[in-house]
Length: 103
Image (cartoon, rainbow, N blue to C red):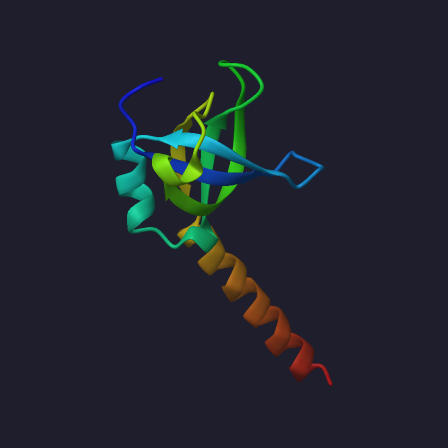
């Protein structure tokens, strides 16, 4: 892989070891992440082999020079979860209000 300057440090949702991995981060995906709330954003990465797609949570974005290694896989997509998180918060607030009314 060539043409990337950044590495996304990602915790894979399916990884039971909770280990962090570095994935090449290209300009297009970086632009999507740059303005995103990382708490509400997931990335799709190539993991374990080039055709396997896995969701992960970005912990930090580093320059390749700081990461110090060449990642063997890349971020292939960005998932914005803002709308879902708003619905989840709204449902929680409704539940809390209904619990308070029933007392």
